[in-house]
Length: 428
Ligand code: DOR
Ligand code: ZN
Image 1 (cartoon, rainbow, N blue to C red):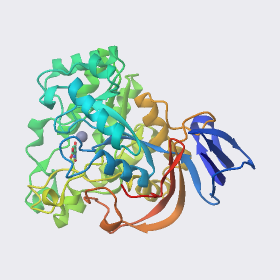
Image 2: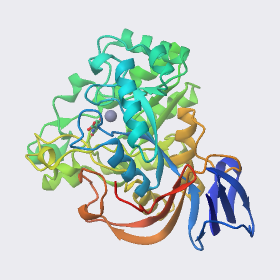
Image 3: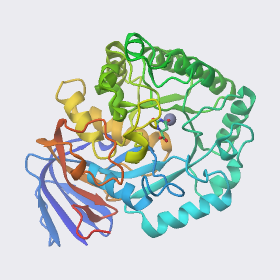
Image 4: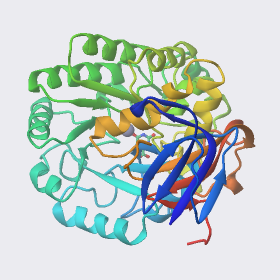
């Protein structure tokens, strides 16, 4: 299949590309990038006034399969990804069962092979059953294609175990992704600790619970001389710790999610459980520090932390509701609206955060428009506005923190592995 994209603004900092060009896709690969390509294509896309960029690499996604297919499946989650402009996702291992053994990873690989609509990369858990007691066999799981390990949803409390995990991961060249949270300091909190938690009469989560664990894991990474990736930064102190570690030459990278740079704890004032996330939404000052970290390069990546939950688990009392929000379909538009429109990042800067850096951190061969690479790319109308509504979301769960919000930026086409994968042709 040949797809010709005409007159778009092509952006890919990996090959120093930012300008009006045509692009040709042939047999799953990008075969030409230049001015005025003439080709006998099966499909021609007129992309005047549109952005053409590599498909996003979302390195923090919960697809819930196996085990919680009522929340999301590989099929529904990857369709949501395509609609949002994401062509590769890292699937988190807090499934039922957890991805902690060869049998379980084979089961997941089989589901992916049969039902995925986009590229799904696999994270295995650090410890068996994510219980924090016994390490998984990283060598075996890596042989099965796992690219990262994480006990996401919780942190490994045992320091020695974590150090060993970092050393093993380094040996097998697998990325360690840390959900940094000290359970003891969490105090069973459900919102940020402060005036708002007091006013609402809800238990608060201190910022210490996040940054003391980041501090510990950075120290362990330094000791092990191993790369370490910190998931979902939410507060100022965490940004400062990452900046300091990077300055020292420690191999640490970090991501944040759109809700941490666009929302604050005030969003929970209406007891809306769609604002309940872990870590919690923090203060204005924290959100501003997160934006600062994105702008100055301290925070390498933006990931959705797409965390689908059913209505039964969300539309209940705030304390009892699950933590998490969906994000695959809104990540790009929230980023455009909050980071590009405000002048905090330019387009190449955003492409680095959502494509280039995550691909680099994961060590995968994806995320570029360079000739010869896999044809994973998106065509975006950057100024087109849309309203986030439950009905329009293709994810199986509708727990978005942005329902009712007008956002800028519409994904017009997603090309995944050389095929037009979105707009969807048939419903599966
Ligand atoms: O809000 C969250 N939801 N944070 C996490 O770390 C886990 C995630 C989930 O799996 O629902
Ligand atoms: Zn997490």
